[in-house]
Structure formats: structure tokens, C-alpha cells
Length: 169
Image (tube, rainbow, N blue to C red; front, side, top):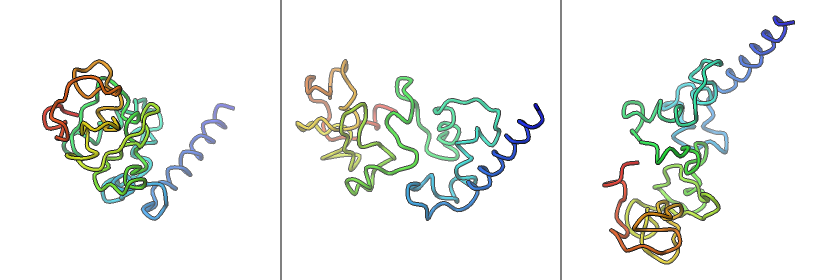
């Protein structure tokens, strides 16, 4: 019986792994860079099958950081131990699809129930532009910071500038 389940598991893994090896750049729903076979040679399996090892255990952040290490892709840091997928959708460029942003960085359009608009790194609709909408990626979660709080309180601080130039992501 154990051999049966092992065989069934292997067949299931092989079928799914094989399907994800094909070029999915024409499939609606997977946007670049993650749908680009020149950047992720194994496409789906690079993330969904534990580094091509079905028994590997890894957190979402481990999987993201395995590429976002400064070698394979831009290096990033996790933000206060929050899961990467809280703010980023690894499959869709939601900002681009919704607002036409060319600076979308796979950022979601809703985070923790708050609308987010990220159209550029600086200026209007950037990280924290200081307007009354409080829909910048930095503004939608901050509650205890001195600046750019989601409730509008806090003092002005480099409004419309690139927050990541001082605050690493």
C-alpha cells in the first residue's frame, strides 16, 4: 500500500512538474518577470515545488529570497518579518493591470483591506506622497511610525521621495 501511494505521489508530481516546464508566457495571469522563462528556467516549479525538491520545507519568504539575493534577482530584505506575499503578488502585476503603472514591482492593489497605488518611485502615487489619500505602499500599514501613518497622523517627511533610498526593503 505504501508503494502505491508513493507511486501515485510521484506520478502526480511528474505531471505537474512537466506542465510547469512549458513556456507559460502566453498564459494570462502570470506576468513578467515570473512568467518569463529566461528569468525562471523552471517557471512554476522554481517556487511551487520547493527548489525542485518535493520534500523541501521552506517558507514563502525563503523561496522569494532564494532568487532575490542580489545575484539571480535584485536583493531585498523582508519588512519586519512580514510575508512577501502580504504586499506582493508573485503572479500578477496588479498595479500595471489596474492603473497602467510601469513601476508596479508586483505590489498588490489592496493590502490588509487598504487600497494601494504605486505608479512610480517618486512623486504622486509613490511610496508615500503626502496627499490625503494615504494609499502609498508605505502609508497603508504604518500605525506607530512618526511619519506617513495610514490614519494621516504623523509629520511630513520627504513626501514623494523614494523611501527605499534610505529605508531598505
